[in-house]
Length: 422
Image (cartoon, rainbow, N blue to C red; front, top):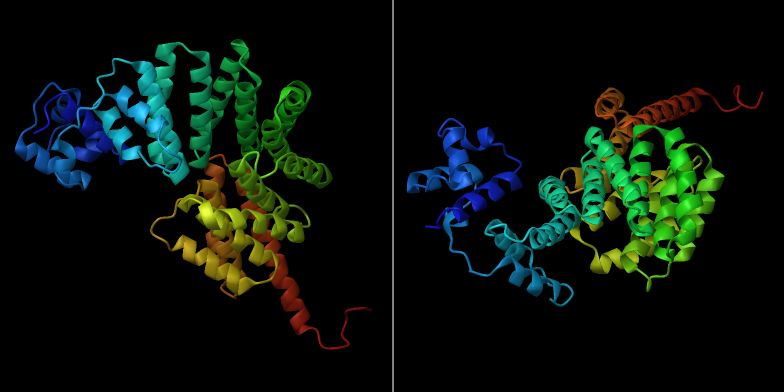
């Protein structure tokens, strides 16, 4: 049996990793007070308690009571950071964190930073958020402005991916405030400002986002590296796109893509092409040829080294591209395969956009009432969660699709030599 306080730390980590409150874990078979004392290390666990909690968590009892390997967090960190590329030490690092006594907050911060990044890379945004909340607390304890800004930027991006805009916006505002007050380097300030611009855009605050883009281009881009400038210009291009200034959006995208070669930063090179594909398909009219070229370039890399999340994002973009190319059967097959999958990792925004595509296809197939109901539900949900840019996309997609259906119906009813052309 694992002794306290290690048992309590492990129990709490497993509970939080599943997004459970104390009340949600104990159900009717245990009091929250008793669970709290177990997690704090005040009470030793009984075999009956271990069996009950393991069942509630959906794990074997050994996950709660298995022995520690005795390695310190600092030692595990050294092994992880010096491991060859491609080595996955997440499990070992996670065990070291759960058994850490908390005597070195800086080491714990670094470990949690690596674990949160791994969770985000896997698309496990709930676990990432749990890690980041502790990171923020540790950053404040350490009183290090760089760590305070970075943890809040990551938290803002994570909660944005979850669709939680009410949390994302203040986190980004605070990150930028910390960066400015401490006069942090261009990289930290730029990251905070880009996170805030992206969130403001999704909130529909385009005027504010535009002012921040002007600040970015005036004060930060001249001092940014090529990699930083490429990401900043892509962020600015999205704002131009939403403002209806497609010419500026195209110019910014083209400049951003031209700043990088694959050898500079292959991950960002690929991500920018995927992002440019999404932006091109949202222009009016869509830049379908450019989107196809950029997506093919991204796919050539992701098919070889893409993570499960990146491959899902790629297939989602391929579904949207197929729709705009008129390949509706391909779009339907790709979209439904993703939506029906048991391990869907896409962000809230990407899930909604994929569901919008599914609703549009329903309408075009003749399942008009069903498709309208899907899109109306998605539009209301996006509005209620303050994802106003996304809500606008949903309502516009509904209006456009219904107009297309009416146009097709009118053409079908018009006899040859009829009113068209008079």
